[in-house]
Amino acid sequence: MVKAENSRGTTPAPSPAARVLVVGGGYVGMYTALRLQRQLKSGEAEVIVVTPDPYMTYQPFLPEAAAGNISPRHVVVPLRRVLPGCTLLIGEATAIDHAKRTATLRTLGSEEEGTGTVEVSYDELVLAPGSVSRTLPIPGLADHGIGFKTVEEAIGLRNHVIEQMDIASSTRDPAIRAAALTFVFVGGGYAGVEALAELEDMARYASRYYHNIKADDMKWILVEATGTILPEVGEEMGKYAVRELRARNIDVRLDTRLESCEDRVAVLSDGARFRTRTVVWTAGVKPHPILAASDLPLNERGRLVCTAKLSVDGAEHAWAAGDAAAVPDLTADEPGRECAPNAQHALRQAKVLAENIVASLRGEPLQDYRHAYAGSVASLGLHKGVAHVYGRKLKGYPAWLMHRVYHLSRVPTFNRKARVLAEWTLSGLFKREIVSLGSLEHPRAEFELAAGGERPERPKDT
Image (cartoon, rainbow, N blue to C red; front, side, top):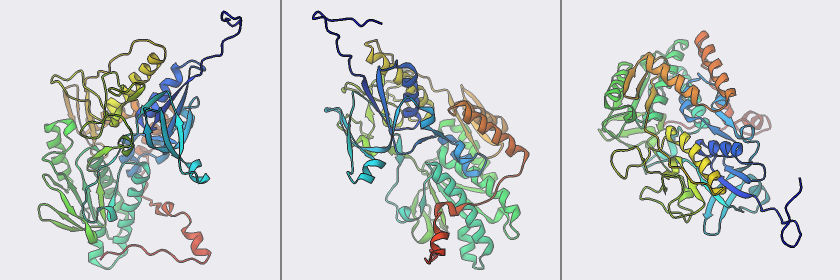
């Protein structure tokens, strides 16, 4: 191919490829980078993805991973395999100066080098860092609370629950036994309800293999500050979920708050007190701190103010979607309403976001994001669930089946779909696994002991 020449007869230098910096490797980050990778022509743009972990976690499967229905490695999607055409940096953004088009990053390499941080320039910025757990200054929560947002936390919680059953089975102290068999979950949204329901199902099954623990010996408590749980599935299905959980002897406390969990005693706003070694905190999320460390406009809740085209309002070449973005809902009847920060919107926003970036690079018109909310599904344990989809309300086995079919269709890559389906099939044919691998959290403990160290003491009840 012969290159065109300018008026002086020399070959013009090729224009440098645009650099697209994607902050975050979750739903929006991964799917945006994946679509950019597919749609951009060779040399048209360089896509850099900055993420704390080299994988994307499919969070709706965390409860089933905690219950042992799905292997942990099948809940995550390896980004290096999915995004071979992108540059992947394992680290996190600590500051963004969009006026200068630079981001300050802390990577594994910069920490090893002792340089602390590095600066990366960009032409287009995609902010999709997701959210972090929203905690409150409750006495004892930082010391004893357990989160449920990552695959590590989900597997750690599974190990913890089985370990508490082992402690209760072997102790002679009735106070320690009662505390070990009391499990308090704070938050009645998807994460809290599904985690509690799946783990209660798993522990109930596991209790048949303990000679001195019965399912009724365990106390499961759900604490919710509002008057309903699972608001996404509607009031009627939320009330059904409460009845279903209470029928399983789960203590559901509505309009109640956790006031303290110091000294391993959960104190509730209704005056109840429970000695417990397990407090799981799933009471909401908040915007990622990187948003506040940027010069981009935020709303009163700390989310990026965005347009319907998923660009940051008033900031050229800056884009956002998912939990980090306040995107106007064009399908809503009332003006000013924003899209809910959930996976249903995040997956669809990522598609429009990537297409708009490509269109912007090519000087083509952008499209608005619009998606009418289809409904929600939630699992309440094996063969139990609730659903409110396209106006239809389902409960029990049909809702549970819809929950599995929907999320199987949404989990990324054919590889993951096949593996998850195979595990579900095998779990239906064979018995559950009830093994705790708590030693994975301290893999060098045995070697340190053999090398002359001391075995670390377990925290004791006070």
